[in-house]
Amino acid sequence: MAEPQIHFWAPPDLPGLAFDPLLARLLHEEPVARVKLPNGEGHAWLATRYDDVRFVSVDPRFSRQAVRGRQVTRLAPHFIPMDGAVGFADPPDHTRMRRVVASAFTARSMRRLHEHAQRVADRLLDRMESRGGPLDLMAHLNRPFPLAMVCALMGVPDEDQSRMAHWSDTIISAARGREASEQAKAEMAAYFRDLIERRRAEPEEDLAGVLAAALDNEVLDQDEAVGLAVLIQIGGAHAVRNNSANMVYALLTRPGHLARLRAEPELVPQAVEELLRYIPHRNAVGLSRIALEDVEVGGVLIPAGDPVYVSYLTANRDPEVFADPEQLDFDRTHNPHVAFGHGPHYCPGATLARMESEILLRSLWDRFPDLKLAVPDEELVWERGALIRGPKELPVRW
Image (cartoon, rainbow, N blue to C red):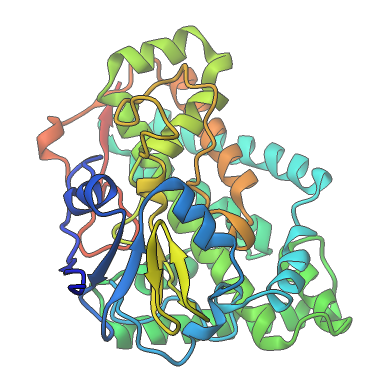
């Protein structure tokens, strides 16, 4: 039997919410394919169908830990997580680390964060109102809002937010190069190492305090605690920033959908779920896994030792699961999307991200019911060379 083709995949810098054409083609024509990305070595398998994505995400024969030390083909010139991070762990170590993080997302802490989020959003909207439009919504709302929220979660004081933003942007960019990324990662790690040590001496009810307690109780070692802090700080600031901006853009360019939400504000949670499913929020794929033995996926045999990626983007567009998947449908009630991942590596901050998105969409149009783009759609500038997709600027007026 002939070897399957290897697709060289250099994801283009796509405008707006355009879907990657290679991903779309593989989903429908070659749902388990071999790809080679711009960095790293060799090739990897890519699963695109919903059922195959979920299968690879939970089956213990596919290991994240086995990726460590291997130069697997990838989009970024460097690995984003630190070596001891939860992203590179398998159960039971992964389960142990996740349990620590989950303790920071109790019902009580989420109520506290919800109240804080509304105050932060209102304060930012007050500043926008007093300044007047047009202005860049990324600079005035979508960037500072999730940054303030994840800093509040972590215990990072307001005066250090700008440093966090700089480090996160440098680490997550595929375009700034390995050296700059590694330096930013080392500086952020040193910051959190110091913060966690301070919490060991003076406990606080924040995630740094939770990590400090886990260190004292020998549930985590220092590298694991710092790796978790860095991962959550970056994800909480960067992913929500871009995805919430994508949501605003989607509504600004779909007046029928926006009018529906304005008329039926109780629909916002369901609309957020559909926006999460529909929006292609990243370029390429996240971290790979390694097949520990020969495993069949979607009728294709993955040999032991081969790296495997899953695409949550294509899983969310699988017509076997979602009727009319290319349509943004706020009446979609059955919506088992995997925008936050699936299985052991499901995003620990999903509840906070949903809450932030709902508050932002409600508060923005409550304050500015006539909000609209300040430039033609085709003139918007989008992030280039980025792992997480989104607008670089989002000029609006009202």
